[in-house]
Amino acid sequence: MRRRKIRDIDSMFHCSIIGTCLGFGEVRALLEESYSEDLSSCSDYILHGMAVSGAGGISRFSNRLTEKLNSKYRIDVHQSNNIDNYIALQRFWDASYNEGNIAGPYWAVLSHPECTEDLRNQAFGEVHMLSHLAGKEERGTLTEIRNLKDELSKLKSKYEDDRSKRFSLSEENKSLRLENRRLSDRLEESIEEKRKTSEASSIVNYEAIVEKLKGKLKIAEQRNSHLEGRLNEAGEEMEALREYNELIIGLSKSAGDALESGYDICKAESALNLNGKRVLLVGGRLSMVPHCKSVVESMEGEFLYHDGGKEQSRLTLRSLAFSSDIVICALDCVSHDATRCVKKICSGGRQKIIMIKNSGLSTFTKELRKAV
Image: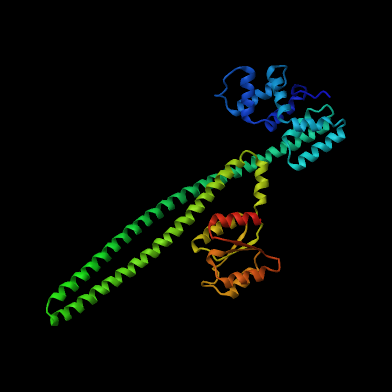
């Protein structure tokens, strides 16, 4: 079976063949090899035009272009070689298109000797409309990338502010510890000093000084305890921001990679869409709740939260669980009673229940994506 070379195919199809079946880097390499020129200063658009213009002639470039397409899509070409009539070739194209396998079958069909004018026009039209869809999705993805970059910049700024606050709290904590030691030393000195004075006067003065110093020491200890609590809260917030920061960076990279194929990004996004499902988080660190809510809402879902028995009642938990589609229970920060209640409610099978070992954002996101 003698297959058509690209120059044997009507020139109106050359643009779609080159644009669909070859990457910009491959086109640049073929042109530089065929014409022995350095084309690094030429834009992708100029190179695409040069390739389309040269595809129809009898030239080294046209021959190398055909060889490249046959080599790159040798599996699809080999499969189509066993087809000897246009009806079977039509089925081959329809099946490949429905499966999302476009580039290889497109070249295999258009270069096949049994390809009719109607089949060429059908394939060309479907590929042409896919390019419009991809362009539309790329515009949406570019907007999403810009938004993600803005959010990432804000998160970095907040992360730096929180780190600065944590440092200030740590320094203040050190100062208080030093003050505590100084007060303790002073108390011991006062005791020793009063011991050496007369018994009658020392008792009065000693008791007054001791009570005064005890009061100061108690105030200092209370303030120290308060600052240590704030320091722990700042640490949890920084950990939440770090995990959310990593998630944003991962999403930004995924969105950037999605620019390579508008068709693939449509499939990926639809696969991670909650389609309005209600997701209930039971327990977990309070600092993580806003970030978990952002993840659920970014996947077109509705976020619900119950603290797992700290403040909210079991009756509220039952009501939220019955009305949810997915229930996620953070085992590291939830009461046993709340866990038993969730398991009992979800035992009927209508709600999907997920038990996670820790309430980190990355674990929550990973398990939620598995459940979608």
